[in-house]
Image (cartoon, helix red, strand yellow):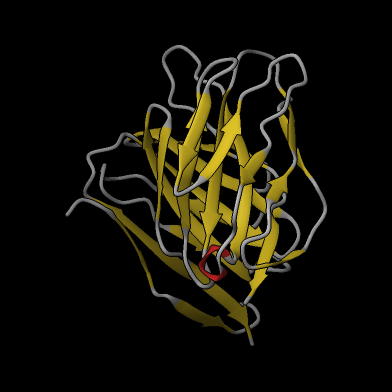
Length: 110
Length: 115
């Protein structure tokens, strides 16, 4: 079955550490997105990529970085510069209007 | 810029009650409108969509009509079930030439249905 896989499901980060969240898709979709979800704030766009080797900042890109070396993969790195990284992170892909979401990664700072 | 406004929550209903969740939007062009549902600990699933004025999206007993004159896309269900308990997001996207669409979300509303 085609789909989108996020890993790990739960991730714990110490203060000052960088961590990378994985997002892999086999839907052959061109566009991929990273959203951050906080209680009561909905989903906010971090980064998105329309094609391989190209990506754009979303609304809250500070403290995050991404790469798009392959069509199937769009990893998100949460750097130590992100002051409040505890959140639920969702990856999505689309071709046109329809979005497919992964099951998310819950990141907690300890 | 584009924005989506949802009614404040949470909402708690008894089983078989009627549900309405309000959603209004602001957009520069002619957007497509969506309702997504999120069950605990999971990602988002598309519930229904509408791509032009007066279109009605429907799925699993839920309905929403694209009202351009009131810039609204309210979600309704005639008889909710306990299994409908989830977070519901209204969203819009504007498909621009040469680019895949970005989704703009409302803040979401938590629905709890008690037996």
